[in-house]
Amino acid sequence: MSGQEAPPVHGGRLGAFRRLFPDAPTPILDLSTGINPYPYPAPALPETHLTRLPEPEALAALEAAAARTYGLAAGEAVAAPGSQALIGLLPLLLPRAEVAVLTPTYAEHAFAWRHAGHRVREVATLAEAEAAEIVVLCNPNNPDGRVITAADLSALAAPLAARGGLLVVDEAFADFAPDGVSVVPRLPARGVIVLRSFGKASGLAGLRLGFALAPADLASRLRAALGPWPVSGAAITIGTAMLTDAAWRSAMAARLTEDATRLDTALAAAGLAPRGGTALFRLVESEDAASVFAHLGAAGILVRRFPAHPRWLRFGLPGAAFPRLLAALAEMRRNVLF
Image (cartoon, rainbow, N blue to C red; front, side, top):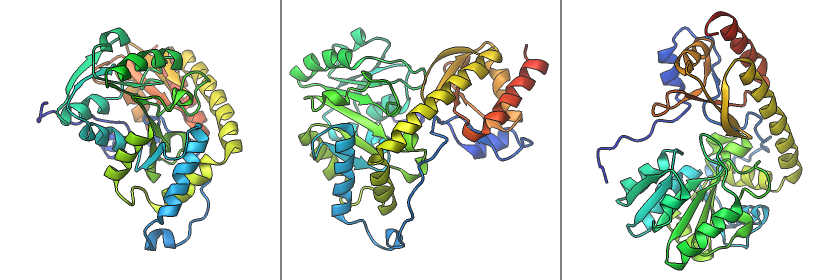
């Protein structure tokens, strides 16, 4: 473990963006975080959500709704204040082990396991991960959208579990993925835990809600570690409503598919080569990535860059602000880069 390792830097950070582009027009169009631009219409919340602690029955109802939505048994879904909290907590609950993290991926995974004292190897293929005691990966992957089928993940998990290992699958971007991607329908499986983000799919990232989907024994350990009030009353009410709103989720999946296709067309017209993506973002590769970032930044549009991969840029869906992105890309192509 390197106690001096700096925490990963993420998207968002509008304060830093404004310092970098002080003359950029406002409001800032933040496409750096891969969050649904069409937030779930939250129901009205009673004042008691602010004046009282959540009731345990309400929390149980939220977790039951999550379990039903994901097709699990009661007790196998654990609510947390965002999947990021689970990424940090899980390494602290397990004995120190050799951990393989499939990279490139969300940097918090390797950081959290190293910070907790585990021996971390960052690997490029599943074959390199087979000897590890714990394997961690994102599926679909962030930031390139790489997909490993649920069947292949199950084939990895079985021998891992047989020797007491654990497969951790971060499915933060799986809510609108095609059938056969998520490993959740194959749960409960011994030695497999799945992390789900609520905020990305719902567009309500500030609500801070996520779920661990795990066998009952591991779920119980996580629940105990999180304590009696892991999420707010607002998160419980809104989370339960969205998870039980199958019509909204189905319509949203279709809408996001259309938007992602439209974004593909716009990026291709701007000369930006696609590298991958999910229903909520696209990753492109360009020799001029730094210039693209600077041009869009000057137009008040923030996209995600990656210091370790300077040719990459990630674009979230712009939602109602699509015309603004199209105009900036068109101006860039006419006058700046190409």
